[in-house]
Image (cartoon, rainbow, N blue to C red; front, side, top):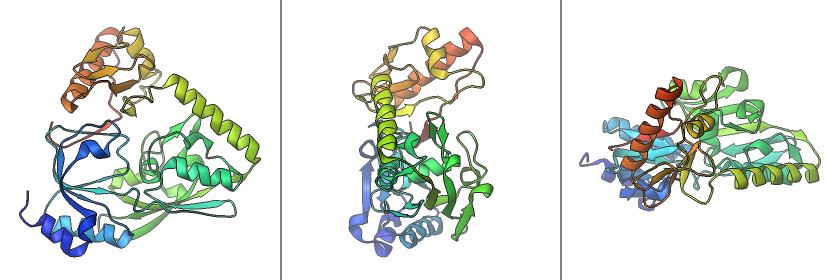
Length: 303
C-alpha cells in the first residue's frame, strides 16, 4: 500500500471514518471479498470531494460503493481506497410531491418516505436492495418501473472535483446506463418527482411486489441480485434454466434453485467460486443457445 495514503486520509477526515485493511465481505451483499487497503465513510459532500482529491494526489486508485449490492470483490481484496456513500450520507426529505435524498439513502427508505407522504410512482424500487446513488448510475428498475420515470435531477461530483446538477433530460438514462456511468461522475444526491396517490393503494402495491420478491427470489442467501444482464430478446434466468443449470454448484456458489437468474453464496463461497460458476454458466448457455450472458455484477480487486 502507498505508505502514506492512510495517514493522509486521517489528516483530512476523522479517524473513525477511515479504516485500514477493511474486509470487503462486510460491505457487499454477496458477503465475500478480501481487504481494501483503506475504507472511507465520508459524512458530507465536501468530505467526499476531499477524500477523492487525496487519492488522486497520492496517485492511489479508489472506488465508490453504496451498500455493495451489485459488487463482487476478489478474495485478495482491493489495492486502493474504497469510499462508501451509505449510512453516513442517507438523508431523505420530502416537500410537496418532490423527494430530495442523499446518494447513500437506501431505495427502501426513499419508498417509505414516499408512502408516508402519499406519493405514488416509486413503489417499483421499494425492494431493490441498493442505494439511490447506484440506482441513478445504472438507471435501476424492476416490475415495469425505472429511475428514469421518476428522477427530476441528480447532483454529482465530476472528475474535476466540481459539483454539478444535471436535469433529467441530460442524464441519458438507458438500460443499466446513464451519463453518470459514462463520464465517471459520483452521485451526491437526487431529486425525485412523484404524484399524489392513495396511501392504502400505494401500501398494497408495495406489499404485492414484496410478496413477489419473497416467493420468487432467493432472499434468504447472500447474492448480488440478478447476476447477468438481460440479453436482447431473452431472459437470462430462462436461458440458464433451459440449459439445465438450476442448482448447479461450484464450491460454495450456486445457481439458485428458486430463480436461475441469481447466483447465491450458498455455503461460504469464495469470490473465485462465484467467478468460476458465472464463467461456466455463460459458456454452457452460449454453447446451447448461441447467446453470451454478460455479467451485471461489477467486479473489483484481485481475484
